[in-house]
Length: 311
Image (cartoon, rainbow, N blue to C red):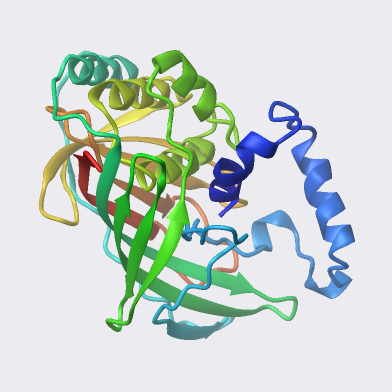
């Protein structure tokens, strides 16, 4: 939601490059919102909520989402775990290249491709996430969000998003995006404007997800995005993998504890086209007070279609 508001309002931002002190900003926001002391927890115990990106209605700050929740109340001292999907199976690939070099070579190849052009986009992707809230009394509740998204976007960035929940309930929203820059240098600058730096794995995952949910990317845009991911500190090549839609790709990942819990952020890439087929988030070392095993997949997205249109 943060990235969507930033994208929608960026032209009106009087200081787009003034990021300030993020830690102080969070503290100020808590004070302004008068959060009760009993509701505040140490960072590792706060709610670990995988990012859920909601479409913005034109002229509105946010849109109401109608989703089907599978609510799994869990007591922190109980033995029951919230349901999470099994991790993907990665097959080791022998190579002498570093993960960064491998990804940059895929990016270079993608940049040479020629594809049908068009300023509009038709997107189809599916999200799954486990949203967990830890309360001051140590009680824990989890909500499973599984949604199917179909987006039709015009050349001006205006369009509609049809969101279907797990129970089959569907609603359509009007949305508005600022078209992403086509020039590599301008796109790099856009990537760097995220609320969390792109140099952090969490920031890279959030910004990438926001980008792939807003428009179909050209070969040059895909190459620029992959090159930026290739520069992530600690990037690793996990090997060949079959994603949750049955497609074969290559997995690259990096870790971050910025969310409050050590998390691995994975990007599944089609080496032939340079498209990002999916993203995954997995807790790697501890789940804190969350009732999930470790390791545990807490969020994933499968990108099924990103097609250019002329309208």
